[in-house]
Length: 180
Image (cartoon, rainbow, N blue to C red):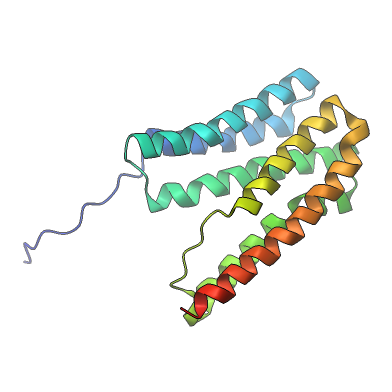
């Protein structure tokens, strides 16, 4: 039997991870909510938990690979729930949902490509400023759908355009990093 000490394993159950996971419940809540105040509250709480989980993970020094994966997955599930509900309610046309979610779909495709192409595997996926701007734009857009619907369509087009730019930015980052 080998008694060599191994590297410590980060716990999966941490407060930041539980907060990230709460967005899955918030996504379900949004899918079944009806009123504008309830939907606004769910978006606000989801946004707060998105900030809080990362802040707590850094502050308590419990950041982990699992948490780094869970956070964006929970974010995307929440946003997918909101967009799907808006499409079902007729607030968004299907093409608008695609425009809002374009960057997210392309990020998933990019992640799978990067994990299956040997020379891309060592390149870490990190949040990029333009990607964060897309996320902010998505949140502004889903709130605008509830409080200022006259801004909805221009915002969708803007977020869609930012999504294309963010996809190009991530692609260029991978291309530059692979040469190192």
